[in-house]
Length: 291
Ligand code: PAF
Image (cartoon, rainbow, N blue to C red):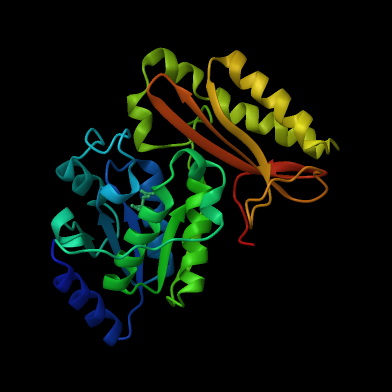
C-alpha cells in the first residue's frame, strides 16, 4: 500500500495504472475510518483493479462554528484499518498542498445546496464540491464511491460530475449501520453513553414514517409533524425532517411516488443525519437506486 502525500506523485501513480490498461476507483474520506468506510473500499475493489483512498479533513466544508479543529485525526489507526483490504494507494494531501496561497477558485451549484443541510451549513456543499473536484482532478478515477448516509452530498457530487463532464462514475453505497440501526459516522464517537442509547431512535422514526407511506399515507405535512414529535419525545433537537424528491431534493407535499425521508437532529453537541427511501405500498429501503 503506497502512502502518498503529494498531488504530482498521486497523479503519476494513477496515470501509470490507467496507461497500463487498469481502472482506478477512488474512495474520498476525511479519515477517522469506521466499518462504513471499509465497506466503501471493499465495494471499490469489486469495481476497479486499483483502489485509492484519500484522507483529508477538508477545511473549506466546515463553517466557522463547526468541528474542524476537533475532527478526529489519527492516520496510523486509519492505515492499520485499511491494511487488510485491497488498497493500492492512500493519498494524504496537506491543507497547503490542496489550497496553496493564492488559491481562489470555487465550485458552486445553483439549487441542490439550497435545501436540507445546506440551509444551516451554508458553505458546506461548496466546500465538498470543490475538494471532490480537486481529488477527481488529480486521481482521474474511473469510479468514485460515496455512502448514502450523506444523501445530499451524493446528489451534489453526482450533479457536479455530470455538469462538468468529469468522466467519473459515481457509485452509491448503502448506509452501513450498527446492529441497533444507527448509521455509522465518524461523529458517533462524540455521543455520550446516554445520547448513544437515544441515537437509534432517529432511524427507527424514519422507518416508522416510511412504514406509514407504505401503508398508504400521502400527506407529508402530517407525516412530518408526527415524525418530528416522535423525534422530540425521544430527546432529539430536530433541525429538519423532510420528505423530498430524491433527485431534486424539492419538498414533496403529496406522497404518491418514491420519496426521500431525511432528517438532521442534534443530541448534545453531536449532529446526526440519516435518510431512507419510502415507496407507497412498499417496505422502506435504505439501498437507494440511482435516479
Ligand atoms: O463525506 C466525507 O467524508 C467528505 O465530505 C468528503 C466527500 C471526503 C469530502 O471531503
